[in-house]
Structures are given as C-alpha cells and as structure tokens.
Length: 187
Image (cartoon, rainbow, N blue to C red; front, side, top):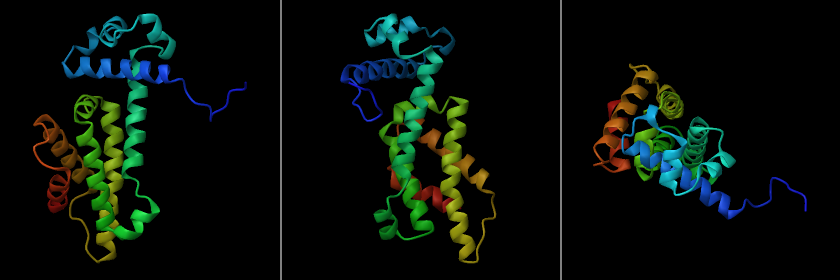
C-alpha cells in the first residue's frame, strides 16, 4: 500500500501528540520555569515515555513550534470569512468587525493556551500581524468614506493586543462581541 498525503493518520499518533501538547501547555500554565522544563517532565505529565516523545519531536522547541503553527492555522481558518459569509456581512467595517469577533472568540475558546503562548515573542509577533490585517481593513473602509485614522494601525493593534492580554489575565470577564465593540470604539 503506497502512502500519500490523503492517507489517514493513525488515531494513536494523533492522541499521543495531543497528550504531549496538553502536557506542555499544562506545565506552562502552572508557571513552570521554562528554563527548567524537560522532555522528561513533559513525558511524565503526558503519562508517556521520553522515547515516544522523540518519535514525534526533535526537542521541546519543536513541540512548541508545532503547537504555534497549529494554533495560528486554526485562527486563520476561523477568521477568514467564507464567500457566503462575506456576501451576507457586507464589506468594510462590518466585515472587519466580524473578523475581530471571530479572532476574539477563537482566543476565548483557547484562553489558557493563548495566555501561555502570548508570552512567546515570535507567537505574539505573528498574532500582531493577524490583528494588523484586521485593523487595516478598517482603514480601507474609513478611507473609502472620506475619513482617516488619526492613530497609526500599529498603535491600535498594540493597544488591542494589550487589552486582549488583560482580558485573558482577568479570566475573560467580557464576551468576545462586547470586547470587539469596545476595541472598535477606541478608533
């Protein structure tokens, strides 16, 4: 039997990788000193062995990179409107507002993970880029209406990311749509 990209991945592999990812996130959520984090501590938390870890990952950084890639891919899929939704939402600020709500809902659904991952400089930079794309749509809409932002998009995104970090640290006390409305009001 030949192997191709469409072949199914063994469910045991999926489960094993999920267990390692959950173990790493769990340890990081407990504020374990990242410099003292070991493959053995991750394997112990996952209730698997180190040899199994090395079947799937080179090292802890490789595991972290895979988690980041998966989370960002999932976020991109979540906030990219389908052609059907794009027509029903309309253009401009409503579409970007909808994307902001989807962005925040995704973060809300994965709050513990984002709280940990946003401490990673590279991850935060990439989330910044995604949010910048959303905010840039607002600028296009405002320009089309003859209005322009008085504040550069990067400052709006930095402020918004700070709000999201606070929101996560406080246990997400407001809904995604409420938070999105408050962010949009700032601009």
